[in-house]
Each structure stands twice: as structure tokens, then as C-alpha cells.
Image 1 (tube, rainbow, N blue to C red):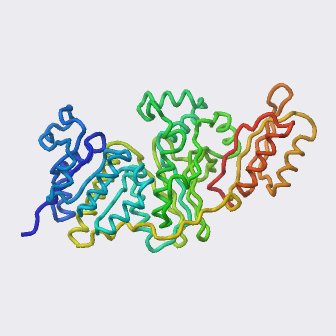
Image 2: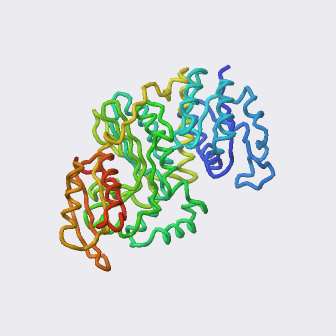
Image 3: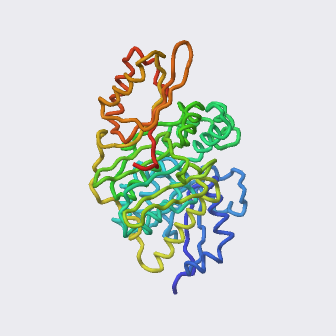
Length: 432
């Protein structure tokens, strides 16, 4: 007789795990209608089975022994929401080895070891889905795999970290300093006590590595992503950006020209007219450009118990549907294209540059001549008094190579007339 339900093992019963249980309990009828099967939680792996929980009705399912999930032949799906690299990686590989399907929200693991996990899944004919690892409740990974399956993606650009977007939004709206807004974000629970992963761009970099791997079908690694965080962004940078028509965002960028790829995460000036410029607070948005479809944008909450848990359960529904159809293991495809990374001379962008110089005749001419010598032309220039015989020059360049801009900055640092290089940011999202 055909099974009436499918049993899953849940690894982790924290914020996201609790959300997964709540959704499965509340939506059981809908899930059965969609999949033709009930979804039953058989075991929940926790670190401490005696800890008080929000959902006490699950206490009888708690265990501290992973073998009760991995070695149980009745459990067909493992949902991993414990986070971190170890032991999550070992659990997932062990589950796949035993022919179990996997749903995970683990961005760190998928960014670092995604290719290995997907290859093991293909070898064993198992599903591995990880929609919740990027942008919370936004179904961006499924869109890349299914919605763009007949298109060729050339660019993905997005705000994929809610903490930094909250900080930059508040700085822009209130003219506040970075340090003050960071403290506020920590008090509200938007930022961790140690915010390094968020504010230095590492969280966003992991997500961009995942997006680039899926969107471009290449085995991107975290070390392939150029990363710069927001801790050096000042309210003056934001104010001058606004004066020139820009908002500043921590932007993830994955771009392909021909077969050559670049992936980066860094504070970036975005024209106020671009949709990403108006994405504020803890919201995420991912802009995707395909050769056929053109421009699309996905927007929504980037974190939280229920948005993330919704993505997990959505993946779980896909696993169950695939099982009914007999097509498990044919969804998420392991990367199969050769990875060709651009060198710095191939990475083209406009740049916002703010420097402090000696305030005397001919200095601006020297600066513009230096830029011209490096094949960099200027789109906008502002010169403002600074203090004590100094002036501030704010420039936006035309399209320039990263290698040329790096050369200009290195030369400026040796010039007597340049007191300080305050900031240099990419400008994205406008006309090229």
C-alpha cells in the first residue's frame, strides 16, 4: 500500500527549526493537498533535550543522537537548520550516502562546500535544496534554477544582508554616524554582539558565491569573491552621494561577460532612480538580468523565523512532489562549467572617489591629468573647502578598469598635494 505520509528528521530546533514545525503543523491540510502526502516530523536533533522549548508538544521527538535520524530507514528527508560547517557537513553527507534527501538553510556550508554536497546528491540520486540559505523568504534560488532555465543570466546584483541594509538606511535617513546606528541595530536584535560577519561583508559574500554558482553553473568559492564591508562608510560619504544623485548600499554583484566572471560585495553607489536604491531597512532584494527576459527584481524579508522557515518548507514540498513523480535528484544541478575569473583589468565600473588635497591653484588640474594618464575620465566633479588650507574633491568617473583605479589610488597616496583618500566606491546600476 502506498505511503500516506513522508517522515522527516529535523536537525536543529532554534528559531528557524521552531518556525518549520509551526508551519508544518498549521498547514498540514494544504501541504497534503499540494503533495498528495502528509508530512510527519519523526525526530528532532537537539544539543540539549532538557531545555525548555516554545513547542512542548514536540518533546517526545527530541534526541541528542544524530544516528536516530540518519540510521532510521523510515526517515526519508533530513531538514538541517543547525547552522555552521561542522558537524552539519558530516550529517548532510551521511544522509545523502544513506539515500535521504536534504533541505538546508545553511549558507556558510553551501558557500564553502556546496559543489561537494551537490555532487554527492547527484551520485546518490537525492535532492538537495537550500532556498533558505539566501535572502530568507525570497524564492531566488528556485527562480535561478527553474525560472531562468531557458535563459542565460549575465548579471545578478543585490542587497542580501538585512543588518547592513538597516544600518546604511538609518545613516541615510537620519544623517547618523555608523557607530551610533550599529549600537541601535544591536539593541534591536538586527545585529549580533559581534557583528563582523555582517558589517564586513562576509555573510553577503557567502550568499553571492551561492548565487553565482547557481546562476552561472560554475563552482564559485568564497575566496573568489572580492569583499569590503561598511565599517568605513561615513555620513559624509552618504551626504555627498545624495548630492550627486546616489544612495549607498552594500551590494553583491555577480557579472558575466562572455565566459569571464567577477563576483564582489562592497559598499556601492546606486542611482536614486534604480529600484535597489529604495530597498530600505532589513529587506533584501536581488536584481537579475537575463539575455532573453531582460531585467527582473525579487524583493522581500531577508531573515526571521517565518520567512526563512517558509523557504525551508517550500523546498520540502518540492522534495515530496519530486518523490511522487519519481524525479528526485534531478532538481539542483551541480556546477558543470569551467570557472574563468576576470582579472582586474577586465572589471569595469564607474567609481566615486573622495579625496582631501592642498587648496591651491592647479591642484584640481593635476588630479584630472593623473586620471587622464590612467585612461580615466570624469563624469561629475565637486570641490568643497575642507579646513586649514585644504579642499575636498568628490568625483564620479566614467567606466574604468579596477586595475587603473587601483593604480591611481596608489599614486595619489604618494603625492604631496593629497592629504587623505577618504573613500572610493563602485557605482553600479546606471547607464554605462
